[in-house]
Length: 512
Image (cartoon, rainbow, N blue to C red; front, side, top):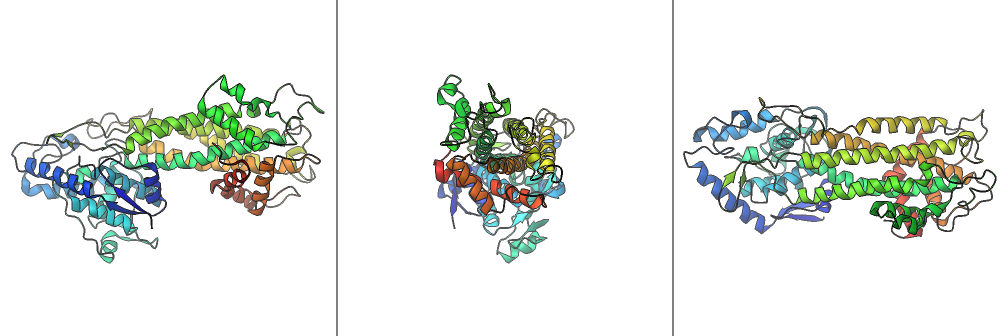
């Protein structure tokens, strides 16, 4: 099994994906263990002094003015976990919880939190045992980080609350820990707070969304190219010299991908035949500009994610010179903004894909295709309602594109009076990404059927490969009306699993 070693300098996106989705084993580096021990010595020294230090010998949030005596500090740390584990709603997906726990471990191992090495090791042990705390949809305002979701994870470390075992069954966390020989942690000064105070949930979801969107943007370039073929459009608008004079990197990459898919097509360039067109519609001609802008948004989001993956997010933090200082690094604004940016870009990509699908189905704009791509129009409805489904998905994505990060609601008696809502931004982006895959799948379904209805014209070799692979995967082709939902589900799986990109890249080589 693949092993990810956590050191003091952060982790990579591939590390997060390996642990969250691949079930990779987690180990602490010797450097991390030494840094944990050194920072703990600083916290222990401060705890022994009479002076109040936030998170070590005081209450939290609006209650930070109370000095807590030594005999109550263990109870204080237990209580913050128990009281903050206040989530409600549906369970969050297993991969999100694993990412959340792993990224909190990343910050703990930085040596800036003051957590003991044995607590960090227990976090790794729980991940390696594939014990997944039950975390709920609602409870995080993205400041101070993802408090409620992280609290539910910390509760599992204490042997309390519920968790999912490796078999997928939810049971009391204490039972699961005992079965795997893991002793519950007894939290000491600062440790409860350090386990709760980070942007780990929203960051984990950002990393996974970027991985999914990377594949979906390639898929959208492919389906845009297929639609261009099906509509007998011109690929001249994809010429590199046209994109060189507007040098947005994403636009150039999308145009290059479409051109690669369309190489040696016998369908493109017929826009001057029976129904002459000076230009193709925007949804066809401007596909690289829209998809490219989304790609550039992804590049910015990836940069933010990389910075956050290298960060130690906690409050207070232990500094190398021995100071323990309060700060605002837990605020989720940097991550929340890009989560919202990505939802906006995804909604626009879905919108332009839906417009191409609608064009394929409209006999007045499809340049010779049958109405709704039906076998016997009137008797058969063809893909009429598939486009309805696509339109419903796009409309929901437009609603999901409303930024969560533009909202703020005060909490903790106005001590936490401006919050990021980054968790909410991440949750709606996950929905948007899933919807985008479905929208692209419906365009694929329509475009491949339309190409096969162009008698006497030969599609590009890459297009042919996509069609053949789709048919082999259960995505049906032209014919009389049939139960459509299974076909669309097969198309969704074909896109979502990366099969579309893989089939095309066998012909084109790696797409950008």
